[in-house]
Image (cartoon, helix red, strand yellow):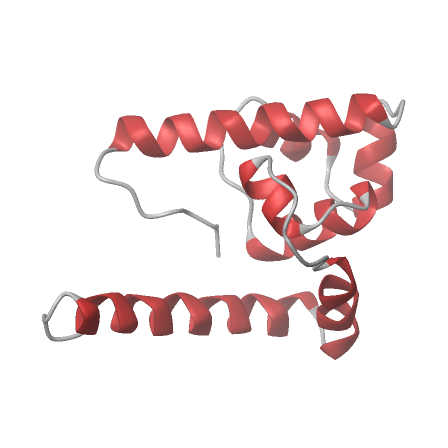
Length: 128
């Protein structure tokens, strides 16, 4: 399952992916790592990592978590470029210990569905 942040248009979604790709490159460069080194640390194929960095594909949930773990950044910093008020990095490590990447991806999908339902309820619409 690929992560996508709900936006009003394809152009906005492409901009979100582009910003995420730039953050991956920026943080990777801060650590002094090549793309190949980050690929090795995350288990993501170098060709796939290249596509993520160039915003040709959005990351899958397990890839997003592996990138955050390898780069040692919290999820909001990786996703939005801002450090969270409370560090979430320990939570990422706990998620990794909970199960397989497939199980974590399933949890991610469940969270997305719950958020969709919550947003629909907030807007007074029936959930999808």
